[in-house]
Structures are given as C-alpha cells and as structure tokens.
Length: 194
Image (cartoon, rainbow, N blue to C red; front, top):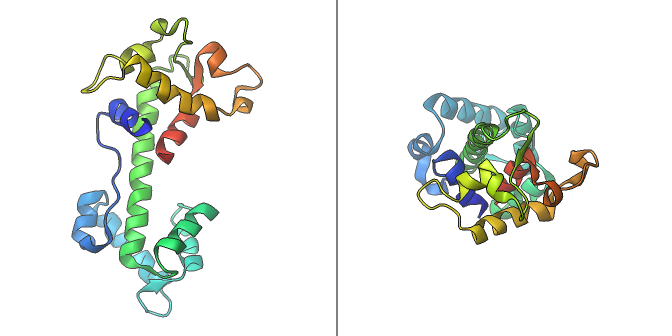
C-alpha cells in the first residue's frame, strides 16, 4: 500500500532497482546522471586500493560514508548476503543508484505532504474514523489519481503507520488514532521501507 501511496503522492513511479548486468549506460538511464556516474565510478576506483575491481564490505561502508550515504548494520548484512562478500563496481552503482532514487523520492514526498501541512508543524490531518471526511488528505487520497484509494484501502494504508507511530515524537500529545494528526516525516520513512 505504501508504494501505491508514493505513486499517488508524487504522480511518478517509485525508484526502481537497477539489475546488475545492465552496465553503466543503463545506470545513467535508471537514475544517475553522467556526471554522477563518473563521480561514483571514480570514488569506487579510488577506494579499490588493490585494483581488483572489488571492495570488501568494510571498504564499501567507508566509501558510502564518504559519499554521505552511511550504511546501517542491516544494510551491511543484506549487501554481504547478496554479494558473496565482494562488491563490484556494478553492485556499488546499483546500491548508490537506489540510494539516490530514494533521496529524490523522499524529497518529492516531503514536497507533496507539505501541501497538506498548512501550519508547517510537520503533521498532517488524516482525520479520525468519525471525522475523516473533514481531512483534505483523506479526500485527495480517495478521489484523485489514476487509482484512488477506497475507504478500506485508506484504512489499511494508515493502519501500517498507526501500528508503528512513534508516540514520543508527538511530545506526549496523544496519538494519530486519537486526533487524526500524522507526523508525515515518519510516514515517509515507513513508505520508503516498503
């Protein structure tokens, strides 16, 4: 559901992963500019001190951190599992392309949600079950776009957020289920995990 919401919110397809065998030209098509492709290829080459064409996972972590894309422990486990403990240039380009696409999508989603954040509080009103018809966000999500949400789909979409809502970010002011106010930065993070 979150992926579909991203499509509705940005009116563009969500970032897609680039398959490993497609090469540099496909990478440029898939989300990196030629300048980024050159920059990232050069960065990879500079970190490949042994000139083997491979980076060990710890070397990848250093490289990603130097490019302001630090990897989490979970990222490292997934990368190590997917790449048999050696990362090629194409593997790296796939990873960085996905990261760049996620950042671009996150910025588009922030921009889209800001439309509903009239007071710039970081929260949007999605309504409660009793008064959701008053929510501009609910109205837009259930009436606009090529495939608007049904009421049931909207409930399912919001249920994922409500299940993981970080109440501490609300300063002890209740929950979204109680007042219909949603921290859209956290919602976007959940959407991008999907």
